Length: 283
Image (cartoon, rainbow, N blue to C red; front, side, top):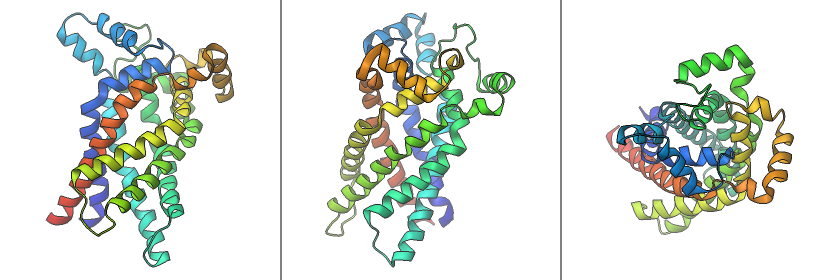
């Protein structure tokens, strides 16, 4: 049971946070792909594509299946790898971990998780980047997987992997800050409450996101369903974004991203820490 605590806690956190904030992910993805640089205009476009409340909900939750699968599996794997590497380093160091140890633990976990889950994120990005009526839009994950494999082969599932690996730095920075914030707030040995967990997770996410957001824009464009017609390399994406919109282009969707990732991060870590705590109590 003990070995399952980390992946179960991460999986539960991924499921809950994704259900809570998925509509913001739809808006952010459309903006990153350059469909419209304005948050409110993008939201309005999604709503005007809908006719009736049922269609509004369906459009805002388009792509929920790959997002649920991706986030639950990713967080489960991430926390599993993170705990294993961190425990190994703690054993080697006979206890206290350094900032570098937290960074290495997070980086290794991020590299492994990114490599294993990239196919899910390709499917998610392509589904979220289109409305249901867009020509060539995928009707389901299975149909999308078949189309990608038939047209692009296995390589199609790993588009955007390189910038995703660059994004490992984002997770590494976030987890270093999160662990240090927790240590600071628990310096007298007390168990952290929900408010302290929320504060540590939000602060660490803000700093990490501001520093590493451009890679998300590059990755999203490389993974879009029509990416092959526009980009062949990561360098070409960088040049086109710079030429079209300058520095601002690399931060397209930052506002809805913050609106999405802050609640998502807070919910993820709050659910993770509480699930982990109660699983330890019940084991």
